[in-house]
Amino acid sequence: MRTKTLKKNKINVVTLGCSKNVYDSEVLMGQLRANNKEVVHEEDGNIVVINTCGFIANAKEESINTILEYVQKKEDGLIDKVFVTGCLSERYKSDLQKEIPLVDQYFGTTELPGLLKALGADYKHELIGERLTTTPKNYAYLKIAEGCDRPCSFCAIPIMRGKHKSTPLEDLVIEAEKLAANGVKELILIAQDLTYYGLDIYKKRNLAELLQALVKVEGIEWIRLHYAFPTGFPMDVLEIMRNEPKICNYIDIPLQHISDSILKSMRRGTTHAKTTKLLQDFRAAVPKMAIRTTLIVGYPGETEQDFQTLKNWVAEMRFERLGCFTYSHEENTHAYHLEDDVPEDVKQERANEIMELQSQISWELNQEKIGKVFKVVIDRKEGTYFVGRTEFDSPDVDNEVLIDASKYYLKTGDFAQVIITEAADFDLYAEPV
Image 1 (spheres, rainbow, N blue to C red):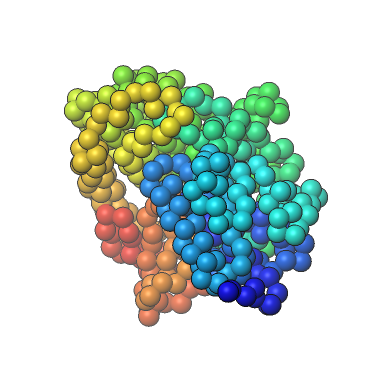
Image 2: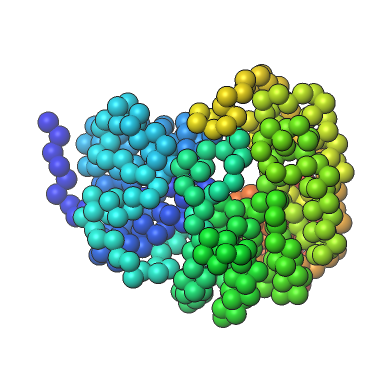
């Protein structure tokens, strides 16, 4: 018979999925710390909280495997309790309770007070912006809104995250000030859709006004925009990006596809012509801008011609950054009623073709950087290199700048001016100026 550990409880928060989940875990940990609980992130603890992702098949599989791994540890007497929160349990709570009953309790994405109660803590409303950040000290995510009102056919996010809900501007400024006071120099603005910010509470798209408030926060040097939607993009944002040195010349705008018939079926509210014009307007307004996008291949009904249209367009647009996913057939989405008719191996081949093309484009764009000087932030030391990023690169997904640590000393978290000496398809090599 297993015995319960007598040591003081230590809560281990395990985060899966996107940056929005990272943010939610940090808020949870901030609340626990304010309740004088001992809390760690992905280290050993006798109570485990798994913050899951339920977005697409791979993410769901990873979440389920992680739950099973910790349930086994509980069975083996290595840990005492397992709690599950986040998108997977929001979406499949009753199924999970049946299939994996050894989890102590499941919580959805909006049940933070209930989760805290189960962990012996109270939800403290007054903790605006109090978080225990898990990212390197120089950058942090700032979630400016929750949920999504977009009707995209392939996406289950509205099921898991609900309707769009903006965070009041003054709360975000307080949060940014607290982060800056803790040494954060780069804010990465995240939401399901940044461009919708303010529509619910200010009755207008208010992203530009938010940016004008955030650039005044002392200590913040870079502000980066993630996850903008192409339809109804607030163009006043580009003017601020061009004129305000703190706003990185960077935008993450998932475009998903370009074939008109696929865009229509995806319910994206745009066309090939409109999307191309939007990108041309971006480049005209901010000529130095790095545009990151993500694409989906293998969507129901995607013909070889649709795919070739997409591939030709990627070659024409020459995106600075690009990721490509294979379509995942998700229940309770609009596209679930369509036949998932593109074979898995064809989906994968198409994704590989796009990424091969992008690799060549990225290599060519990187060659143009050799001999030029860039401001980089040093995120970490890895092996024999200091690893940094330019303003055109987001952590984890984009290019990195590698500086030989056996020759030069740089401090993590600091900015440095470097000259690019060599360039590969996704990495740059540099020396401090």
